[in-house]
Image (cartoon, rainbow, N blue to C red; front, side, top):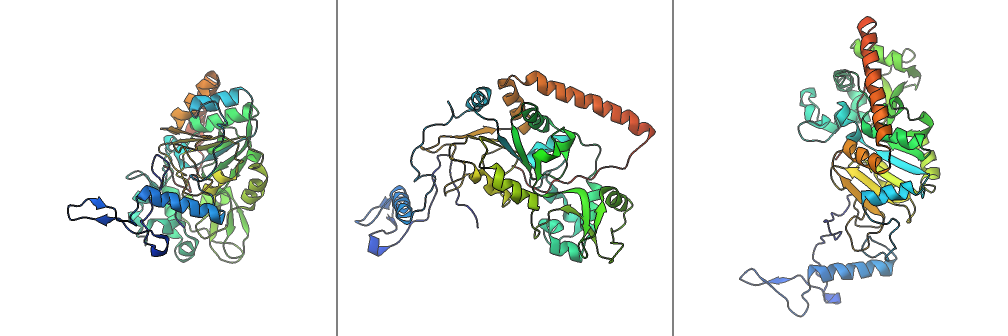
Length: 380
């Protein structure tokens, strides 16, 4: 089911209706191309207003039909969000992240033209790009997935400033949970405790046979992939798959367990680096309370829904949603500066450079097998 499209003013373009009983008819266009209104002719705006009124009679709310709320932050800007945090009005922040926070680490997102993962899959002769992450296709032909998993390792990936910002939220006692669509594990590398992370789309840390469900370790799977061997179950002979979520598979139980508890507690929602197109992850933004401010840090606006619950950045009733458009790392740096955390973020990034230098020296003497990272989501 697709959402109705919305423009920057928060209004939705609806098809014109033809309903004789209600006195509604399509606009009549004269020979000169202009619209001439007869007795029953209405404008698109009035048709939309009537539709909203009809929704009210059915008890269905939309972003446009909701009653006005008082703004929950001083201004619908990044400065307003920073003030909200500085004044200790929130202590249970949920962060939702997608592939956009990892692209600066060298990990491709899925849909960016020319650089996204889906644009690089032609050589695998797939029926369509998404097939490489579909369970039914994997069962028939697992080779493309394992070839891709091996190829996507270009070097040692390190956390970005966006990951480090999440770490800062935790250090300051403000992070309730980080819900991530990514499977690169960079949140853990950045120092975010695993109990603070919900990996909505799974992980490479464990693997299971798709036949008998026997579990295998990360080291076992890594050895098979980089030896170009198809991982075969030692018990039943079935194919062993990393525990990342493919299309056609259920999300981890932890996702639903934490979701039911966390979002009712949240007092600020930050969404970064995702186009919010993959369900059920995308619908999480609707689960925070009506009084909870929501910040989007992304290349473009997304998550704007015709019906109630979606972001409303520019509508007449906008009262809590803020969009900071641009690069995620730059957005996190900006927010860190406004919070007085600039030096702390630089400290974490400088520590990262030292770690990278030490790892480089260690690898020269004792090279380790490479890590496998593929982000199982999209980015805007």
